[in-house]
Length: 355
Image (cartoon, rainbow, N blue to C red; front, top):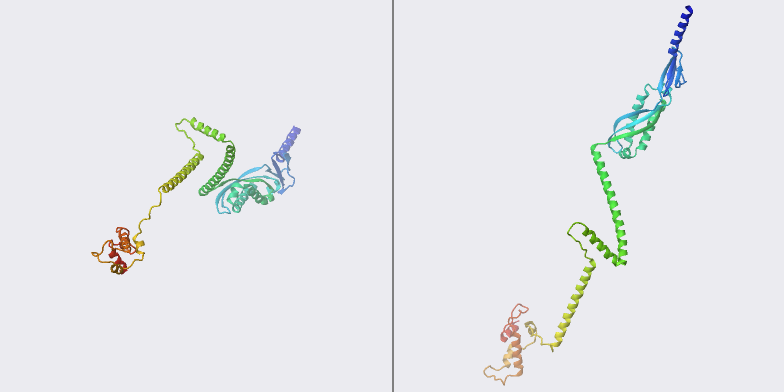
């Protein structure tokens, strides 16, 4: 009986010792052993690990890649735009001893450093870079996290910006800018299409000018296309060349009619015979003649009752006729001074003497 009790006691002691000294380390873990409070540099690998009872304490460190979201941080960019940016950081423990000894909680430490680094990178970047050129920003943020993380035995795998929240006013401004850019591209594309179409049309016009029948066929094809629609309207193109032909024909007809009228007028004048006498001189032309004064005429002429037709000299008769012709257009135009010539030869002579 004593032997059996001794064996059972030894087995119990062994069981207690095994329970205090044997540990299991998972594949994704590493064991850091502290013997009497001092860390052992030898890292316990995955599997069954034997420890010294009472003297050793082991801390298990996870070496898997940890995905940690960074809370959204609000900041002002370099071009003075207020934004809210959130990101995500991927890291793992590279040195379990440093992660267990140098920092109390490496996850919380990485989270705080990531937030401060994100705020700093927002202030150094512009809005366009945050929206369209994030790769350099991600690399810069990773470098900023690597500096303190290396002392903690942490390896930063990658850092990426997830979302950039903009104010509503900035969203509307960006939408207007994008709309204007799209409109500009549409106009450029339309202009290029017009240029190419004009080039093709020029080539087609050159070919049709060499073969006039092609233009007629094209005209008939257009009429067929218009008539194919279910409508009662038929469009017939009117060539511009016909308008030019009609215009030239009308001009030639006008010139011909004008030339024929002038020839008729010339022929009529030639057939009329000798040239007709000129119209009688006007009062202005008569006033310019040098005539004898009234006193001289009265002195040379005999009294009316004593004068006979035979005694009248030819010079007096011509003078009386000239005076009568000068005063005959009594209703004619006024003289240079605005007066109407008088019908009486004596009165006209007195007026000339007074002037």
